[in-house]
Amino acid sequence: MAKQIQAIRGMKDILPQQTPVWQFLEDRVRSVLNRYGYAEIRMPIVEMTDLFKRSIGEVTDIVEKEMYTFEDRNGDSLTLRPEGTAGCVRAGLEHGLIFNQTQRLWYQGPMFRHERPQKGRYRQFHQIGVESFGMSGPDIDLELILITARIWRELGLQDLQLQINTLGTSAERAAYRDQLVDYFKQHLELLDEDSNRRLESNPLRILDSKNPAMTELIAQAPTLMQHLGDDSLAHYQAICQGLDDAGVTYVENPRLVRGLDYYSRTVFEWITDALGAQGTVCAGGRYDGLVKQLGGRETPAVGFAMGLERLIALLEETDVMERLAVPDVYLVTLGQAPEREGVKLAEQLRDRLPTLRLISHCGGGGFKSQLKKADKSQARFALILGEDELQKQQIILKPLRGGEQSQIGISELESTLAELLAR
Ligand code: ATP
Ligand code: MG
Image (cartoon, rainbow, N blue to C red):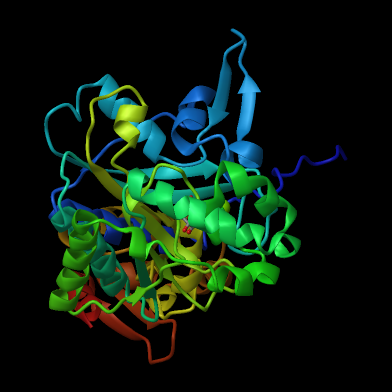
């Protein structure tokens, strides 16, 4: 036999047993976003490499070591998108969507980062991202956070913790930056290699380090709060106030910075303990500088992205799985006339009961083997139509998860199923 080719490391197939949870997640999120007036945008998954270099920043994990970059046949340097914001802004500018107007957008799809694969960290993973443009006040930041809180509620996810912080404006950060560099310079021996390198180029990123050996050092570092001007403080406090009003609990975390360069003022993350080290399921913030940085006019913007694999892992721990995508009915027919009648019947039922999930047996076989397939499908009921039943215009309804089978008239089948489905 020829050697089989395997999927690429860190890139996963999502198998038919898993897609029902994915669909559940995607449907719920889509529904919430739709209700808040957000419109979907779909961008290509490949962009010019420069787009990511200019937006994410040269001195970031992503650009330094995680991008899938290649030369295409024309010699252009292209990159599989590591995140969606850059492409969304690029598309928005290219099509005039974010010029002098407000815009509420979302997108969904695979992202690519060449990281070390482990639980909750893959090389192809999926995000749903939301971006809003043209609104500078704290009200829109708050709206986005309230959207995420609603999404968790509607998914039935509890135990997620909201952390928020503000990064101020770039001017405010500049003063803080010097203080931070001084602090780290006093503890050079405690800095790991990455942090050493970032000390001059991007010291705030050191606060984002996941290295446990540096946790203590980072916890003692000076914070940005005392460098904030009145406007930034007011912006931040208005969001906290709004969260209080809405009854959304949060933790203020002055060490929270984002991995990407383009954030300003608000940053937030939703975190869980249930997934080990990969505990952030959603991250976002304000990025007022990015649109201009990418060639547009100064445009306030704020957004977030959620990591679907991590949310799926959480959902799989809940009982949603049990309720999802099991067929209601598996139809077994025996003999030529019942088989023909079965097709007719199944189509009629699908017309009349639009939510019915009915699998018609295909591929022939005897009673036993058909019933085995019915059982394996996890359907709640088997319907069995043989020559005898057909002659009497009856059908057998057999519960597959315990209970007695019964014979009912074909004419009553629709109402009987409707009643069973409603339970
Ligand atoms: P992390 O700190 O976990 O590396 P990040 O700061 O790089 O995350 P973002 O760029 O903010 O992540 O992406 C938003 C979300 O996308 C993350 O909170 C996470 O849920 C998810 N995510 C990021 N990278 C991966 C990955 N390699 N595999 C799976 N999910 C990911
Ligand atoms: Mg990362």
